[in-house]
Length: 338
Image (cartoon, rainbow, N blue to C red; front, side, top):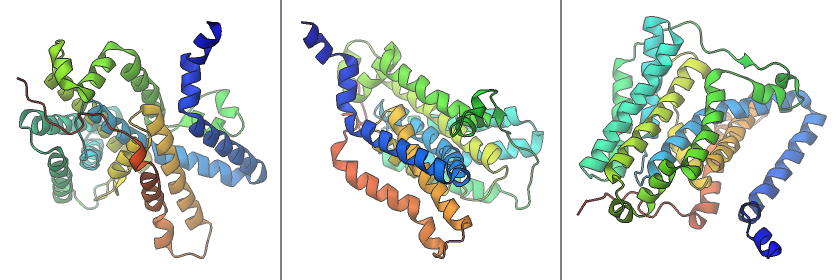
C-alpha cells in the first residue's frame, strides 16, 4: 500500500510529467555554470539581458493564458502592449510621476481587455478578428498622436536586495532588477497558485474546458471570461509600461516589435501554464541576449541574420511542440446560454 501511494504521489507525477524538461534544465544549468567559470563577464551580461528581455514576454504570455484558460483567444496582446507603452510614456512626460504612469499603462491594457471581452463575449464575433482590430487600432492611434521629439527624463532604477545580490552568478541576475521585473517574477508564481490551487482558478479552467457544465453548476461563464480578459489586459498593460518606463525610457512607433506575438509563442510552448510560459520567455530572452552580444562583439555576420535569431527559434519551437500540446477544449468558441 505504501509503495502504491508513493508511486502515485503528486511529486512523482510531477517528475514523470516533466522529466524531459527537468533534464534539459539541468543540462542548461551545467552549461551556464561552465561558461561562467570560463568567461564570467560575458556570461553575466547575457544572463542579465535574458531576464530583462524576458520580462515583457512573460507578462504578455500571462495575459494570453489568462484569456485562453477562460476560452478567449487574445492575439491583440501586441496592440495592448503598444497602446499601454504609449499612454504610460505620455503620462510620464505630462506628469513626471512614474507610479501614476505605470497605473495609466495598466488601466489602458485593462480597457482594451474590456473591449476585447465586449467583442468576443457579448457580440460573439470571431476572436481572431477582435484581436486584429486591437492591433490595428493601437498602431494607428499611437502613430497619429505620437509627437516626434517628445522626451522625458528618468526611468525605473534597479532595486538592489542586500546580501542576496552578492551571490555568485545569480546575485546580479535575480536580485538587482527594477521593480516591474521583480513584479513579473512574483506574478508568475502568484498566478500559477491562483489558477491551480484556488476555487477561482478551478472555475476559470472549467469555463475554458466545459462552459456548458460550468454554467449548469451555477458558474457565470460570461462574468468569468470578462474578468479574465480584463485581468490579462492589466498584465499586457504592465508589459507596455515596462518598455517605456523601465527598459528604454522613451517611446517609438511600433516599439513592441512583435513581442506580443512572441508572448503567444511562449504561452503555447509553456503549455498554457505560468511557470512553463516563464521558462519559454527566458529561452526567447536568451536568444535576444545572444543576438545583442553578437552585435556588440564585432562578429562578422550581417546584422539582419543576427536579428532573425529570435524568430528562427520561435519557428523551430512551435514546429516541435505544435502537435503535442493541447489548448483548452472550448478555446475560441463563443458561449450561448440556453
